[in-house]
Length: 125
Image (cartoon, rainbow, N blue to C red; front, top):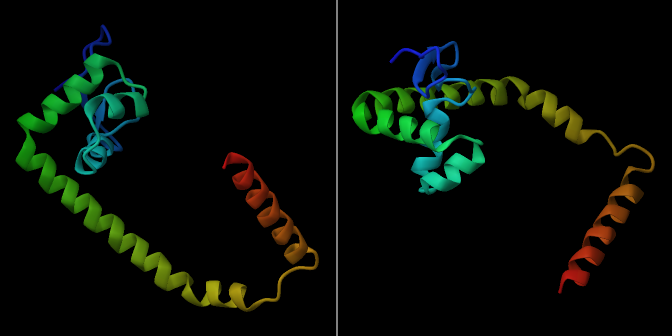
């Protein structure tokens, strides 16, 4: 679908993938919320979309279900491979950081933060 010049909501191809025209929101952003079983109104409000924009996105997903699902699964797989690559690449670095002793004053600041959090939670109850 091509973007219409009068700013009518549409699904367009961008460098980010299939996106809702006039936004940086991709069909896959919406798919993530649909997979988590969020209602369309929540998705619309979360992304600050108009009724027309969410309607166009949901309609596109429904009409092109097989292709969108296939591409979504490929995107998730690619994302997981990238995450694993960087996790492995940085494993030694994170271990060195974790092995360093805390900076002076850090532990006292951490204890103070925990105490403040506990006081706020106690006030809520």
